[in-house]
Each structure stands twice: as structure tokens, then as C-alpha cells.
Image (tube, rainbow, N blue to C red; front, side, top):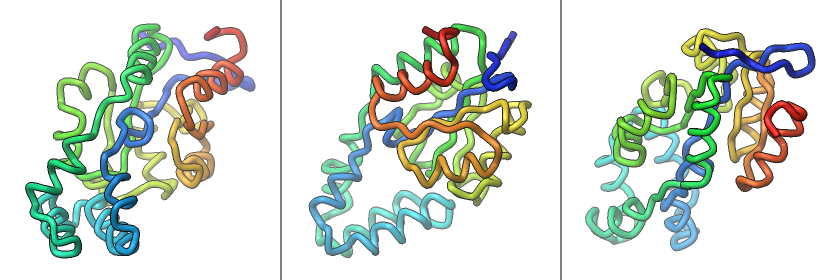
Length: 202
């Protein structure tokens, strides 16, 4: 049973996490560092992938054409180095086990990327629901995707806290009516979370 916690006279019933930059340290950051001359192209491909318009294979083949690397080299050098931010994952598990909140994950990514980066068993164990932009053809920071997340969790937007590493996405969450925390590192996020909730979660 989800209890919720009062913040500013509102019951917070759900905590929603971004994936890359929060739960997973993304290898694709290295790709931008190695090939800054292709930033615009990479960002365009990423946006198409996030909305589900191109597949993982399409993405890799396009990057291969730009960089001269093989698809196999791209997988090895950039995608296989994705890794869990284990301490943050442990915090998510702690929040889940408290029984106070529903836990959601909201990520700008397509399904074929997510199932490689965060296996289905992890999604099912930690999250009450997951929304991927590629499945719904809406991407953060569009406020509509945050409202959809709240609907999936059967709560109101003002009963949610969104945790994301991009301030523009938190702006979108706030436009949808949610509270928000810009994630920089675990200690900072936990401190802001505890400040938001007062001593309840200390």
C-alpha cells in the first residue's frame, strides 16, 4: 500500500526517475567527446531514436557512416560501456521498499535501446511503471509525457517528484505540475530530497 508523504500540504505519492545520467552512466557521452564535429548529427539521430522513428541498428549504421567506425566498434566502444549507477539504484530500491511511494521511470529512449541498457527484470523489480519516449512518441521536456506518467501511476502530477539530470526536463515536469530535482550526484539529490520532505525521510 502506497502511503504518500505531505509536502506543502500535498501528498507526494510517486517518485519518478530518469534513466541515463541518473540510473545509468551512459557510454554515448564518450562518442560526443571523441567526435565533437558530429554533435548536431548525433543529436538529430538521438532525437529520432528517442521518438522510436529509427532502430538501434539504424542509429549505429548512421554513426558508422559518419565516423568511419564499424557497427561492431561502435557497440564495443560506446554502448557496451553503459553501466548502472549502483548507489543510486540502491536508493531507488530503498524508496520502493519503504512502501511510501510508487516508483516510476521516464526516459527519452526507444525500446530496443532500453532493454539492452536496463534489462526487463530490473525494470519490473524496481518500477511500478515505465514510460519510454519511443513507445509513446512524446519526449521530455513536453509536459504531456509527465502527465502521462502520472496517469500510468494512478496519481496526480502534483503528487509526483521527478528526478532528472537535465534542468530543461525538470522545467517540463514543473509545467505539468510536478515537483522536481535536478540530479547532479547522489549526495546532492538525496539532500534536496530530504530537504523537500523535511525530517520524514531523514
